[in-house]
Length: 137
Image (tube, rainbow, N blue to C red; front, side, top):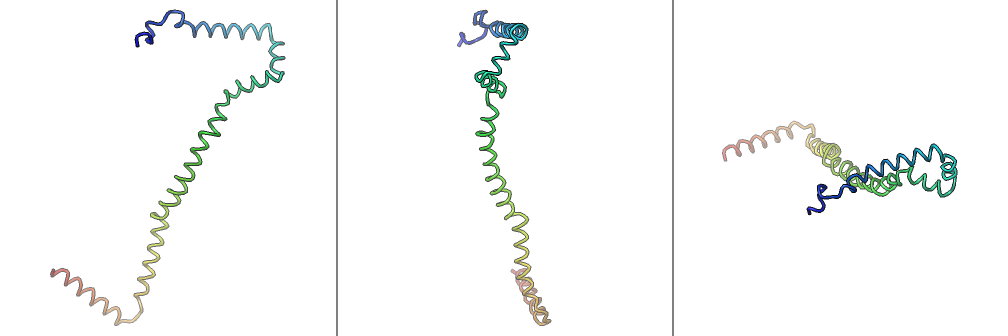
């Protein structure tokens, strides 16, 4: 493991990024200063256009990422999170389910109300008997 540590790497490997950066800056300066016609010919050629598009479009990482990685997660999140969980489970257990339950129970309770006084008296006496009997137990 000591060979991997940066203390033990030879000096040429440590300054290699600086050397390559300076070579790149110098070569681009010289090419744009003295070889601009060569660069234009390279850019308008078929091979030059392909290289230019490849480097200009960031090696097509955005295209690969958008079409294959993020599109997969968007599809999963739409079908699972939105359709199944949000519009499915939460709607059934939440507002739509609660409103359907209340509507159904209100319909059954409205059937108990007949409008006759002897039905209401019987219901009051029965419930009062059940409450007092439960209290005695």
